[in-house]
Structures are given as structure tokens and as C-alpha cells.
Image (cartoon, rainbow, N blue to C red; front, side, top):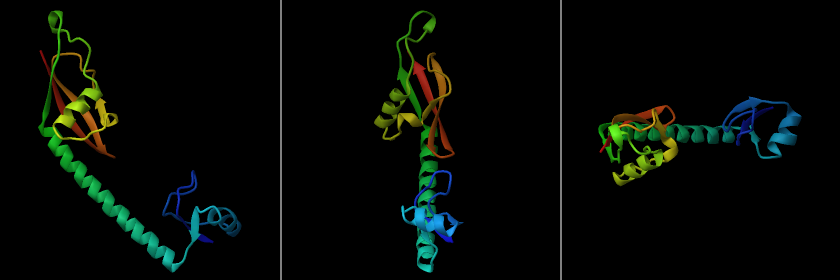
Length: 146
């Protein structure tokens, strides 16, 4: 029996997948527990509409991430830090501080998206990677000054 999965099922299939399974397994487990429905014309149309909507949403999110990437790569965040002998910085700049500074500039970025290439413990320019969406990453410049 051919079924369309309407929920993700671990190690079996993802939502929207169409698979050929044994009749008993389909009727007694998949359909009964709401993981799948039998393939029909109506169900196929529903899946096609959902897949099309998913593609459009994916495209929209990718475009938004690309625009955000361009904007983020234009700016440089400047942090004023305290230094000791030989310009040694006390402490370091954390992803949380970078997030708060970006929020002040109008960018809503989660601190989990911020990836520090090196620890920000010295004066000068540093690169920070921000994962915006799947494979889209922006390279942000951070400058530490006295």
C-alpha cells in the first residue's frame, strides 16, 4: 500500500514522503496512529500544495537571510574595553554582548547564532561568524578599542 506521511517518523520517513509499505503495517500502525494517510487524488493534491507552500517559505527565508547578510557585513561593532599593562584586555567580549549591541542597531540575532572564530581578548579587529539560515553565514567585524 502506498502511503503519504503526515508526520515525521524517526528513521522511517519525513512529513510529505510517499512510500510503499506493507498493508498491515500501514493500516494497523501508520494510519491508526496518525503518521500517514493512504495515497488518493485528494491527498496527493494536499501534499503538493503543502510542498509548494514550503518551497515558497524556504525561498522567502533564504532571500531575507541574504539581505540581512549584506547589511551585517557592512557594519563594524566597536566595543570600548578596559586594558591593563601592554594593552592586555580585562576579560573578553561574549556572544551575549555582541547580541545586545546588534539589538541596539536594530538587528534581532540570537546569541546561539553567533560563533566566535577567536576569543575577543585583544585590541583591534576581529571576525565573528553569524549563522543566519541553514548555509547562509555573515561575517561581522568587531573592533576592540581602549
